Figure: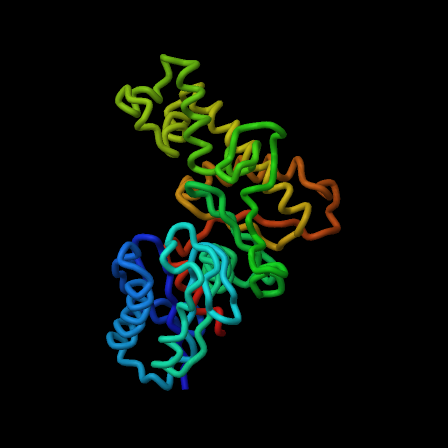
Amino acid sequence: MKMYYIGIDLGGTNIAAALVDEEGQVSNKISIKTDAGLGKEAVTGGLMRACDMVAGQSGVDKSEIKSVGIGAPGMMNFDTGVVLYCPNIPAINHVDITSEIKKKYGVPVYINNDANCAALGEVVAGGAKGAKDALFVILGTGVGGGIVIDGKIYTGHNGVAGEIGHIVISLDGRECGCGRKGCWEAYASASGLIKTTKEFMLRDRGSVMWKLVGGDIDQTSGRTAFEAMRKGDKSGSEAVDLYINHLAAGVIDMINIFQPEVICIGGGISHEGEYLLKPLQKVVDAGKYGRASDEISHSRLVCATLGNDAGIVGAAMLGR
């Protein structure tokens, strides 16, 4: 009998869920509002409703659903199902978000950090498919991460390992939202790239980047410098080069610490594809420890392929 899993990606705005088979293939995907402002009952009720919608649409018998997995932002107790700290959804702080689902479906319900779930999803069915040891780097508003060792999520002794965005790459550098200065996140995130881009724009009023944003610097995005670079703009190219060097600084540290088979890069900036990956690989290869040896296996850099489904797939696979 084929087994299925329900994967849920709990976000501050939406709850996305789907049925996932043993190979990580997604079907019957749904999305509903989280309604976190209405309190914890609204969120836990939404999780239940998401399960019911996915199971109901699939036509799969309950006996074929092996487990349910939930990926959520923040810290949690994996054994009890209690969310310890969720800054984006404070209504569920210190709340068991699994018990109602366990009771109704009679299956194990697993929870983990959403970035960890995305990492596992990419290992199971995405850009890092087949890798036993992999790192997932998410270039979004911040820099998120997930660590997979021997096919399993590594969470540390307290469940919060993987906050890779808060290694320091520039002592006394830019201030980070975590309170430290010079964190990788302050430079390599989409927000960091936008800040770097604006700095180059202010130095060069003739840059094509100003045309790309309609003369309004507040319209600068993570795409602006890359678009300008492709148009041959000098300042745009310099901004991209500096950004890639900032990104490479952290990637090299991750390789030197973990020596993973694959580093999988996701988030909006990863959509730049080879415009990001090719120069990044060059800088990383020149700086990583062991670069001169042809006798060891070197880490590969790849872009994530699952997009928003990565967290759903990874959450589902928590019970595989």
